Image (cartoon, rainbow, N blue to C red; front, side, top):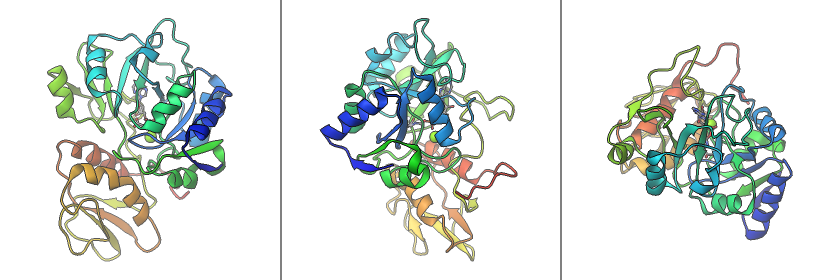
Length: 321
Ligand code: TXA
Ligand code: MG
């Protein structure tokens, strides 16, 4: 493993590694991704192995523009509209698999749909343009743990399991892309993220929200309840810290260990969320208490991640790295 600053030369090296079937961690505007050639079963299998990710949880396929997906997925008018409004950017669309698609069936977990996204981070776009392959890219963290928003976070979690970590600085959005399912007649939000539900409803008229997670068959296989979890327990909607707790505040507060946004700005809070959860996740504390966050705009994505961070952990599975 090595962290390298993203330059034209290192991006070209990373593109060559991807074409050779290797894994490269790269920055996006949301979180760092763990990239591999989406058409290469071995590269995709290596992604699942590196993350310890269950293979029933499919990956997002990244490309440099809508046209790069033309023979991978079936693109309808709604998808074209959303692409024109939100791409490049933090939106993932789940679309029917195209008959000619060469995307690995492992990447899409054998589903008849594929999730596609065009990220806006200049390094991600440069890398996707420099390589001839589509790039399967989950967040570059061990499965179930906090997503990485810096190159160092990737190194901390995946160490020697990746050929190169391209450093493009901290991620500006800080929560993952919004995932919308366009396979059915009614657009359905599968995961709140960097593009708000309000913005999607403005564009499409109406958007359903996927129902609560079913233990034996989540609609989006990534909708497992415990996720984004620090090692310490997490308590939500906390006004103040109890003894032993670190308070992660939102809005003005005197007694906070850290503050997601002293001015109560949701975009700033999203950008700080994962790095601050990591910073508080250590032996100084027995638990992390998080202040209430408004359930609107980016607050939907922040609260979704916080609820999973606080969810009961799978029994018998230690969350210590
Ligand atoms: O912001 C992001 O989306 C980041 C960056 C790296 O692009 N990637 C990311 O990937 O968050 P990952 O693998 O951590 O999350 C992908 C989500 C999961 O919830 C997965 O279940 C869902 O997308 N997904 C992928 N393919 C799907 C499909 N065909 N149908 C339904 N859900 C799908
Ligand atoms: Mg993830």
